[in-house]
Image (tube, rainbow, N blue to C red):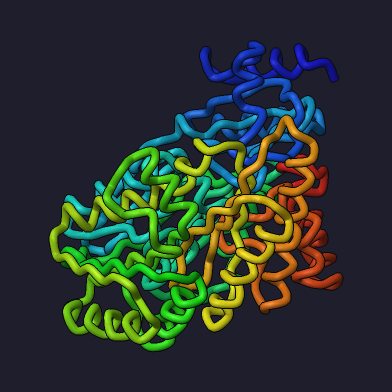
Length: 455
């Protein structure tokens, strides 16, 4: 079907301003932030503001059997929101209302386009907080977080997005709407359909509203920074901390990443250490917890240890960590990985990444959520140099295979998208992969919901 027919059908059912098909808009909505992934040219981009408008767009897609690609802020790093030729890109950013904050039941109800940090800010006004905090929390959206089951800096203690989703409203592939989950703290009636949709990357349905669990606000955290002369020593400290303690944040930055941040936004981190650990405790016993962390770091050979209870200083240090990815992007093109290993394997992963960088001749900046073994080795390359691209792909492949050899996973929080598709079957196995396909067919028999992504 001609693109003009699809655009006309959408404009006939949606209010003015919701449907855009100019070349500039189509180009802007082709890719998420992932490099070295393919994307098609969409027929149209739709900006719904209600569940009913999402239904209208899905109905047009279903009637014409054309793909529909849901999209949040476009901050994904696996190609999950990349467009497909002739598709409808469904941008959910205009559905940005926090419907309610319920302090008595400690929950929030939000549309998918709500910025993650805004949920937390609204919760704080009621003495509560929303723990999931991806590094992109100031611009990523709740819908995108649900689509990939995003994690963040606090997940070492509090868990990932899926641990805080109680219920969902979802538009299915036939444009019908279901409400699944609950508002109660417990509930086991029927299959756990909520968690079937969490992490499904828009391939099973389109989330139009989420009921989110909140927690009582904590006291201001205490912070510890430890520097190490080798990544192995930092990894051994991480393993020991994770074995015995549960800090609220346990983050790592290697020398390349530290240098990138310092060049962009100098924060006094220094450029001599091979690795920095940033540790926070919001426990009522934070003094004892941070003292225990300090003892472990000393035992692992920490070259420098600094502690602070100043909230402004703590926020500055965490800002440095959140700047890791954009700072590395200023050094060149980046191919970002998202691997996770059992915490005991962290030293081997860090040493292995350094060895891969050396043998392939690439620069890799490694940072991540050390406390749960989720690392983001980020490969620097030049997209206009074929040899550089080949080296980047080789390093990426070797890091993935090292991770699986260590008993880890190909993605800790970014999702499979397009980028990790070649590796999924190796991790989950043939039978489980076939089961994925069966579930997809049951919920999306025409195959219109973000096809070619996630499995």
